[in-house]
Structures are given as C-alpha cells and as structure tokens.
Image (cartoon, rainbow, N blue to C red):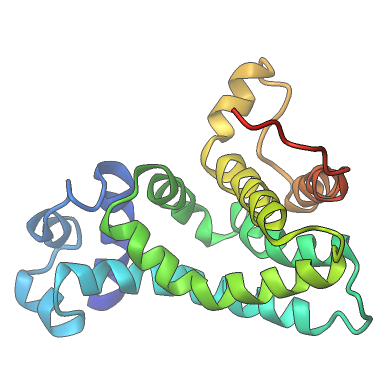
Length: 204
C-alpha cells in the first residue's frame, strides 16, 4: 500500500538523516512513488513527520493510559506507574516497532521540528503521569518532582537509543533483549531515585 510504504521509508530516512537532512524526493525514491502521492496522503513534510510519530506514539500512549487507568488503589504504587510509563515503549524491541527506536533517540537528542511534534503528542500523557507521581510522592516539592521526572524519562530515552553503548561498555555481556527484564530493571532503578531523600541544595 502506497501510504504505508511512504511512512516506512520516511521513518527510516528521518532516523538515518534527521528531519532537516531528509528531502521528500529521497522519501519518494525509497518508497517507489512520487511527490504527488505524498501530498495526497499527508500534505507537507511537517505533516508527514507528524504522521510517522502518530503511527507509533498513539498506540503506545493509549496503552500507557490504559495501564494507569487500571491502577485502582490510591495512592497508586510507584512501581505500577513506572511500569505503565516504560513497558509500552520497551516492548517495541520485540515487535515491528523496533525500527522506530533509532528515530526515537534522534528526536530526543537532536531536537528541531521533530521534537516539537514529539512534545505535542506527549503533552496529554505527561500531564497524567505527573499527576500520578504527585499522588505517589506527596512529600516532593514541585521543583524536585520535575527534576526527578526528567531523570526518569531520560533513563527510557537513553536505554532505547543508546543500546550500542550498553553493549560496548559491558563488552557484549548486556544487550537490549527481553522487554520484561529491561522494564523491571528500569522500574527498580527509577523507583529508588524517585524515593531518594531530598537533600539541601547548596547555592552556587
């Protein structure tokens, strides 16, 4: 199907060359189609990038919110919140969505227009997780909670985008395999950081 070929080609080329470094002509050549098809199915290059992200992130975010909704106790267990945040992304390594991971990493670390689109899609989910973490960690002041949320999200981003670093530094002993195992490790580590005592900060 032409639309699907365009999405797959765009995802791969955006990951390899970045959003700015990829032209619509490169995408159409890789998808064996023409510019008219891209304009018909998507519109502009911006619209195409948003569609690429939507295709992957919408199912992930829907599952995240479903997992949050399934937490019936109040306050919600921290481990359950973190599992809902991490697992739907980590599961990509075991399915067809694995091709999205290089683009995921590039967006987080390079920025630009693609990051704007990413944040646009993530805003409703981020708000829900922030509320859940506030409930689970009522002792944290707002500023501290934001810092710890940032570090918690960074663990996911670098784990998914930097798996080659893990393999290199461990001499091949650690690989990005086994979604459940990886999720459990991330949850354990992040939960410890989120629960850590708050120390008085020195002003520099």
